[in-house]
Length: 125
Image 1 (cartoon, one colour):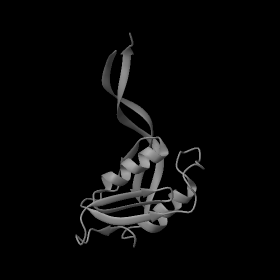
Image 2 (tube, one colour):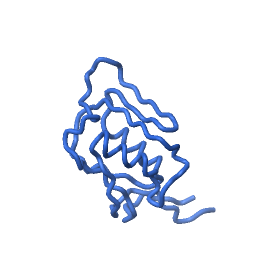
Image 3 (cartoon, one colour):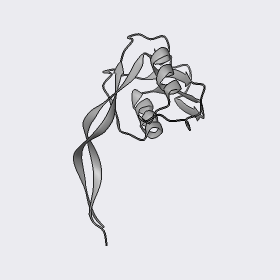
Image 4 (spheres, one colour):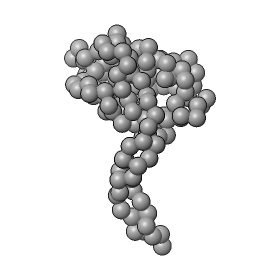
């Protein structure tokens, strides 16, 4: 197989700050060791960068997510929503999850296009 990494314009979601200083997104308190937990309707982290949230959202939505928050450092937060992720919307992320992302963390996903590095197969044997 002949494949190369290339930058391609594709549909993406931009993670942005809609409500600054939202109560659910806390700089880490360093009281516990770093951790990450995931259940059907729960996602939480302790002492982790926002990269973990971006990766979780990307895996859940099935579409690239680009961090445009400008937030640095490590955080403690927990997201809890009511419906399992099986009931997905066209954008890929269930509405209840979008809502708690905004209500609890003050973050919003905005659709757009962005250059994303992808593995492109040029020739398969």
